[in-house]
Length: 177
Image 1 (cartoon, rainbow, N blue to C red):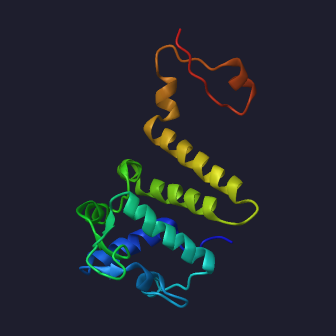
Image 2 (cartoon, rainbow, N blue to C red):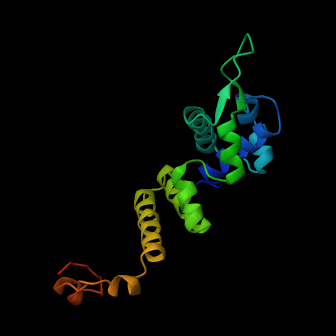
Image 3 (cartoon, rainbow, N blue to C red):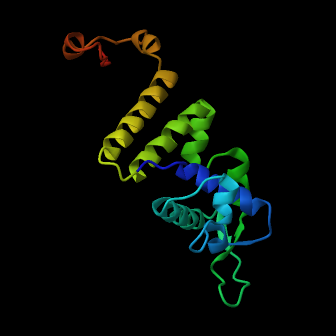
């Protein structure tokens, strides 16, 4: 099963919702046995697997210090959550971590590739690991093409095509003379 919405989008929606209120209950946002506020906000209906991933997203946001419990409720202190200053900054810049921030500076489309690789890795489809690896490889390839264009590499002193690269599909290896 492929996720209908990315984990990144779920996390951004949680931050968005918490940025508009003083505090919210995790299980009201997730929904107890039915549709939750998070699904309504995203205009989707989660499968059980997606709801579990959304639950993990809450925990990851807490571990990353982007949201935190208020500890003000007597009965359920850890599930009443608020956005932190770091969470507000992450939401405003649309980057959950330093890698998102760096990729966004290079090209915002690279973040989508990264989030797609993560979503594929969370899928339960038989081919999901290969799809995740393909997306990750494509992300690395695009970053290299943007930051180190092949024509610039070929212009470097000491560059030469390896014998193996000459025989293959044109892969290039640089070696200093």
